[in-house]
Amino acid sequence: MAIITTPGDLNANSYVSILEASKYFENRPYAEAWDSISNQEAFLITATNQIDWFISFKGFKTIEAQSLSWPRDGVYDEENGVVLPSHIIPTIVKQATFELILSSLEDDRMFNEDLAGLEKIKVGPIELVTNKSGSWQPTKDVIPNVVHAILSSVKASGNTSTMVYPVARF
Image (cartoon, rainbow, N blue to C red; front, side, top):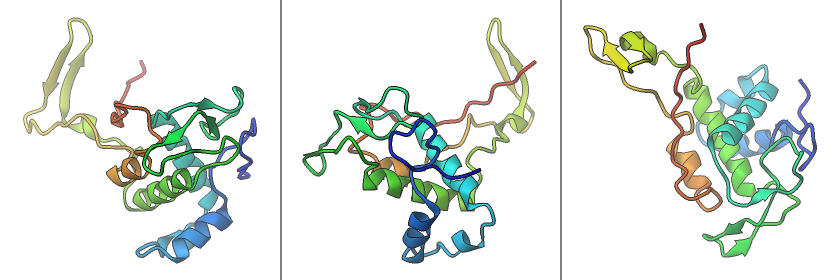
């Protein structure tokens, strides 16, 4: 799939290009793995999608029909004391994308094996029974803390829920 990074484009699918990612990772410790990825486009698109799925941002889309959450109007960056331009993807959103890619190289953040500890889930009345090991935990964070920290000045207030909750289809 081709990377489309044009801000506000109806078909945009990534906040960053392969060239931007390569430049970022050449100066980032522990990022040697980036060069060895055969499908870098997939990582860029997936990280962009995860940011859009799991982070609510201040302001509103510059173009209502744009495919990505950025660019945005009405976003005041409290940390830096500036209104962000409504025609670009801010550097902090790009940095968050890079760091999410790096953390995804260490751990597939969308893979969820948390149901392995469950013996039974019942919907009505609600019932949740763990297996004998009793080691079930709800899920892992899809968006790591470093990404939340980078985006803290542009996230909507109270936006901390990034847990993946598996849904079974019958």
